[in-house]
Image (cartoon, rainbow, N blue to C red; front, side, top):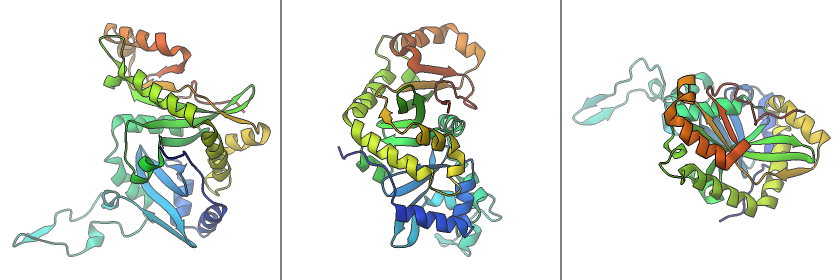
Length: 298
């Protein structure tokens, strides 16, 4: 497994800040509070509802990126059908079907929203409700991250929390209530194996994680437009310079109503989770404004 690494260079930060001051597409992205800017190793991902809307890196002095073609489809195309003649597609104007650039960010977001499931949307709501969340979709190895593959070895998000000894990076796995991994007829609940894999990774990568998230925090509070949403991270980093990584992963469960919460079918499964996880199990019906156990005081 490749060593865990996060962080972008000062040159990359400076180039993004110059682009931000110029106005236009990057300024719109940096200021859009529906989007999460994730720092990777020498590149960034822009997320919306669990979808990577844009991957961006620096080549020389040029900002270069890529997005999936499906996000460039014009959501309200006036002529969505393509004419077929003799079995051949005749696309008269690509601009009627595809966005030519990133200036129409709202159209890009509408196109991406079509590919978001309920669990992805819920996780994104939780992330955006907590301004101390500093990373999402955390792959175990660089080989997974570079391919963009979504595997079982991805922790949903990480938050910076204040503890008595200083600052701590805490990791969270989030599941919608209906997820089958939360249930089992016996004691071998599938989510337990998942959490154990994550915790083994965290134990083995402690120093790499600390080094990376120091860099990530520095990047986030240096990016113009982005740093405004990380006021709490700026205050915590300034007043509590020490940083550790919590080796135990919290499980977040959301997306249920009162009948489901108190129902006989769920109570047994919930007790199994509670018996093993204790206060590492976080429950809230509505993903919106889910902050308990995630948010941190300054």
